[in-house]
Length: 85
Image (cartoon, rainbow, N blue to C red; front, top):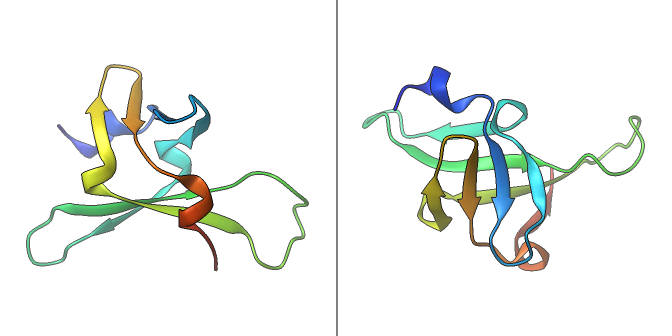
């Protein structure tokens, strides 16, 4: 799959059915040596625009269960994975 085909897919958590965001609004952590995606960083949109420390979740590639036509299904426990920049 090409990166350009990835852009408009929605990221959905299998555990609770919540929409986490779009892949185009996320960052990808890519291994420089192999070119493989290590993880996806999804930023939370809750709160103020002027928040000094945005929340994000880093989802390891192994947590991705299915990549479909319109969405990417992940299985994560968000409370354990939530981080701050």
